[in-house]
Image (cartoon, rainbow, N blue to C red; front, side, top):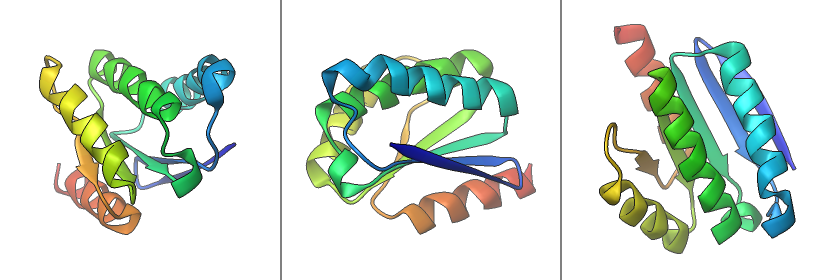
Length: 119
């Protein structure tokens, strides 16, 4: 359902499939364990086309809150325009650090890497 890589203090988590309503908590647990275990400077979540669903968007928003509590930056990349709109609307309503949303994964990872090396 997901894979991850750690590159220069950037944790890249790719969600490959829709977790569905029943799998949201499991996905959140897995992602949370990775974030808390690695404590990177930046987290990038990449949603593959089949994973860009309401269930996954809900998990991303919960991960965003977790990252905010830990003082970590989070961005998300997805080709899905509807998923990006949902994330933008939800991020606009949240307090704290805004969620960074990209249409391309390579741009999201490059931006995160540049920000971590500049810090």
